[in-house]
Length: 486
Image 1 (cartoon, one colour):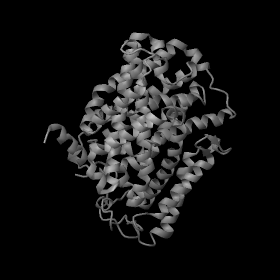
Image 2: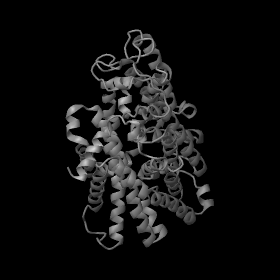
Image 3: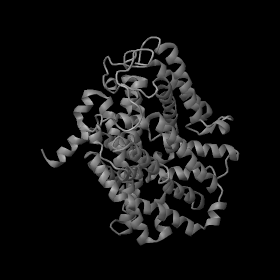
Image 4: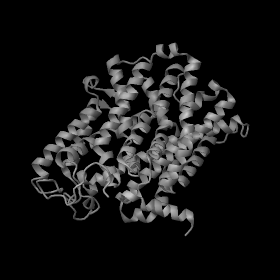
């Protein structure tokens, strides 16, 4: 077997629970991978969307507070137990939703979200590549070729080749590129402030809307809470590789909060001062052709880095939760299918990608928020952080089979949480309820799902001795959130 084939087989093996000796990422590795995820298209886009709602000071507060709150909640609901168990994120969801219930959730949250996100990343990278080729006079600006789309496909191809080789390739690629990505984000932010001036950016106002300032500020905070919780299973799957709980936790936190603020703040400032958060549109005119082309090349690397992490982390979910036919495709085969779907999205819906980015993200965010509420109730209160690791992988008759592989209490709670979200904030039009300015949408959705799952589980599930809850059928292996078991 060739060295490349060995790496692909190793990537397939990594979809199984990781033992302590198989966890090789240091704090530096974890920080590099998570920073590579966050410094990409969506950092600029979420910062730009924030700048369409509030000014710079309010926007920076919303970026930091929303991201920190969202990621903090996600840590307690999913990331810490996934790290401790070493299992795939949606495999852990089986303890609350059942094996079939978790797989049903993975359909929209992985099969739906991943190709869309990969298409977004590749579209900006393709546009940046087009600008570089035209700037170097390799192609005329009026060639008539769909150059941006072709380059987007090329970016996806490179991302596929890297992602299919497994976690070690992802780690090494990010260690090599992340210093450049941090310099890019810092350089773009400095360029915007130098061009527009500090006073101009602080005084810049967002476009007029029909909502007052408190409502707009809450909309901005909500946007960034959703951005943080949307990392969901991907971040958990990658966090499993950490050698220590401290390194995995701090590497993830720093990479997804402080580091992510660099591109987001650049997008916020450029949206207010220059009218666009997309650096492809203003980078070269702002800093000159030579430096601009160099920055565009680094921007391409940023999106490739994020796309590789996106694919590598989420294919694990698909292989573990969609049965033997999917496993027969292998890690590389499933990665390739996701890239093909992303290519189709780029070819047929390029114009709609950016226009619908926020409404699609908010719609997924409503599901993520409700799911987090269920997980918090299930893990912290009902199970008290005790999980049967072997039972998570026994999909036929294990302690988490519930009723025919589904936990109705969790699904009902999920539906209630989703309804609470869309009642407070309609995600497609981003129209808030009057109570939204005081409550947000994601936090009440989490609370509603938490309360309903807790009540139904105690009244129905535990009394029926389903789900392996303490007081019903006891779990066989007790695990607490600390270092991985020896």
